Length: 260
Image (cartoon, rainbow, N blue to C red; front, side, top):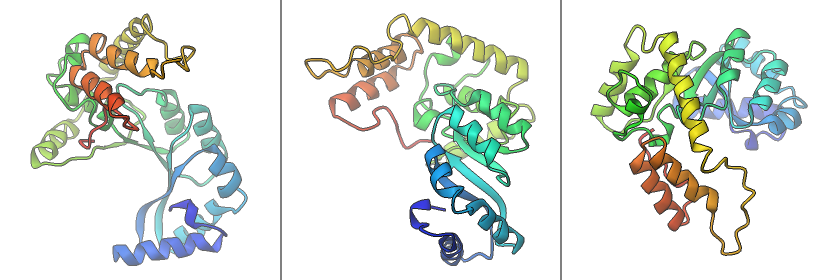
């Protein structure tokens, strides 16, 4: 549900009914409060009692599960989980390069929420062949395979959503997802520890604190160091080139591709 369309509680039903009509279906399995943060939760969802509205629609059979997708800090995620009684699942960002929500994934699972991951291959950043798998000492041959296995190996994760453009991508992802045990918990922890060690090494160059900004020459120094870290620390050479070229071209999210 795009909450910008909800001006009063009754709009929640109208928005769902519009979606059902467009989808030509009598119900939605997972209906999301889309892209929320703590501000949206505290200032819109709670005052309008929108979770209660969603529960009414669930009782009518128009929604099977009440969900939310999330873009904010781990602390904000905990706040929403603790105060969002009735929410059943969360869709959030998580991958080898962005593990900020890792602890909260475990917390959400313990609270009984299903956890679905978006961006398991880092928006395509981890799709190309790289040296990262070798640096982490895993058996995975391809970086995309390692990335997908790592996400699915997290015991709190139920599902991973990866964008695919070709039949080959579908077959590759299906092969990994079909494994009974994509990554053992021990291996998952070892990969996590190796990533932490790489992260500490990368911080020798730049911690991302931003104290060097603003540069009198207008150079975005942290972005340059980010590209260098991808290249020198993680072995993500193609990504490093895309980040730098994106910076030169003044792109909003340099380095991302449409492969995830």
